[in-house]
Amino acid sequence: MKKVKMIWDFRGPAAMQTAKHHEIHLIKYLQQKTIEHHLLKIHELSEFKTEVWLVTDESFVNIIRQDLKPHRGQLFNSEL
Image (cartoon, rainbow, N blue to C red):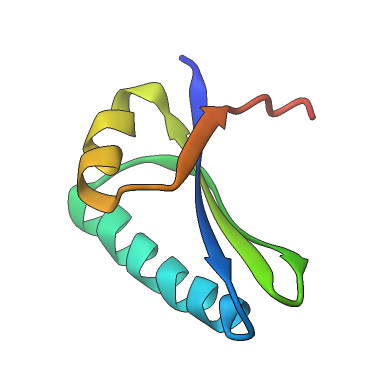
């Protein structure tokens, strides 16, 4: 099955703190909905921009998009 990386962007001086807080809510959501995921990661691009990545199977994409509205998504290649 294809894997999809969904991405949320956070900007500004509190980007990292906001991303960490968002990660907590993502973990709770995934547990509540019993959604399998392969990776949940905070990626700091700079002092003022941080991303949260969630990699899951393609079958979960529609429900996550509807409920959590990620900023963007892309196919995930685990070999990268």
